[in-house]
Length: 426
Image (cartoon, rainbow, N blue to C red; front, side, top):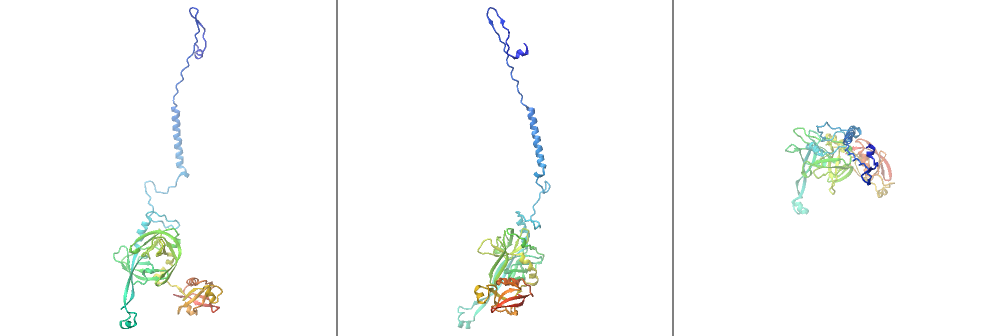
């Protein structure tokens, strides 16, 4: 049988059987079983290996591509880089606050901060008997008895030179009969003397004699300090020596007037901070994050929280040498007491407008007295600069130097005249 017949249903010729019976036998081919399929291991393995190679190539390319890399400025692997505890001297870069910064600054600056204890001795008048108001008893028993009264005070300060020169507030040491300074590392306090003070600026310089050079603090530039920068205060609030508080600069250029027993103390340019400042902190340093002094802690608002005031170094530095060498700050002086011109006073003195400074008193022997100024004179200008109120006149006088000559325009009895004065020293 041919291959063709074997694979197709073809009829065959009939076969004669015995007898008459005939039968047809048809040959049919049986379909061949389907071939058994095998899994394509080889192609799949090759595809898998090829995929791994492609992915590895892409990874190497991304790792070496410049725009996927982060520039690494650290030390080689295996070496650790320690962050500096104190910022660098680069003033253009804002200091970064690390957890250990404040602790490092305190450790470095703390030994230069001192505790100041004072005693103020005053005479106290005590009546000698309950009838001292009666002239009869006063005649026989005397007026009164005098006794000394000693008041104690405390404050802070910081050393600015190795020889023991210390900067503090004038209200901390002013009028003290005894000043004792406690320095870190010494068991006994040192007796100090005042070598310079100024009431208006509330600054004082005192000095102690120590057996060896002392640690010091450097004065920084408060003009470069920005509102919101971190600051650190170190002082002795309520006698708790070397207390550290932290805050920010809240504002700059605050004018504050504080009444005292010696008169009104007028601060013109204070720095405000929310750093906790309490009685005893006065005279202590306010530090920036470089460990530099940017101000002296001076006053607080007792009716508020987080409102403290600091004398900035921009006020301290111009007068510091003068305080040390001369013991005071020389100021220009005219010698008059003045007040603002109100509408009523302008009408009374026959002035065209409510402007100027009315002289209410003239100090005897002062430049104003020598120039012939009197009570009731109205000063309208100084060297052709108008005087709108009493503060204008004070500022103009303060802008002069001792010995300068100035020309005042003065209204008197409905007339104006020019008066020349020579600025003196207060």
